[in-house]
Length: 182
Image 1 (tube, one colour):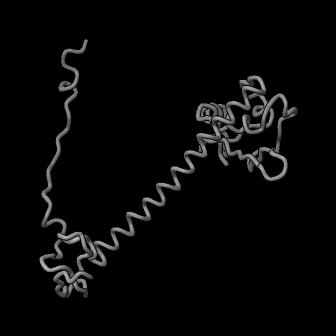
Image 2: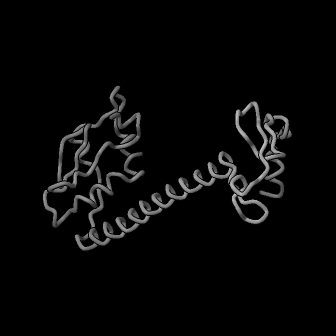
Image 3: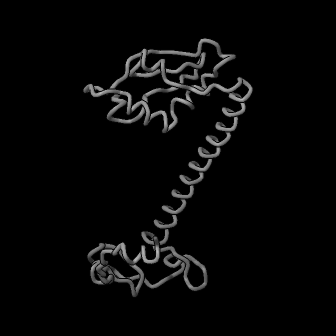
């Protein structure tokens, strides 16, 4: 809840019955006139990174790093027409919905990748030269004592250090990148 330390205004928008903004660090508040200021627009404004930086700056030097209600109420906010606010909120929600859909897609792709990994490298059912699952299509398997299971013939268990080469880097010199720059 420390605005100064966390550099984030802890607010949230309650949408269940009547939309309202709720903060664990401040009072519960709502726009005086929802035909002048939409709660969703206010929430978007309060959650901007620029707002977080400003609030972190003005939060003072106290241990909690909070701001007073009076200071909070004096925060500047640009309030366009209500029709423009609705347009902004609508576009924002379209983007947020796309982000949510993309996150769902990423999760499903990750699950698919993990299933393929398990199938190929745990169950050894990777495609053989004919495109058929290796193990269940009669691929040659041998017992591996260290893993206590069968693995494809020709596969070995090795330490990573035995199959990679360590290469040292070097520090870049700024002169290499600033030659000819005045």
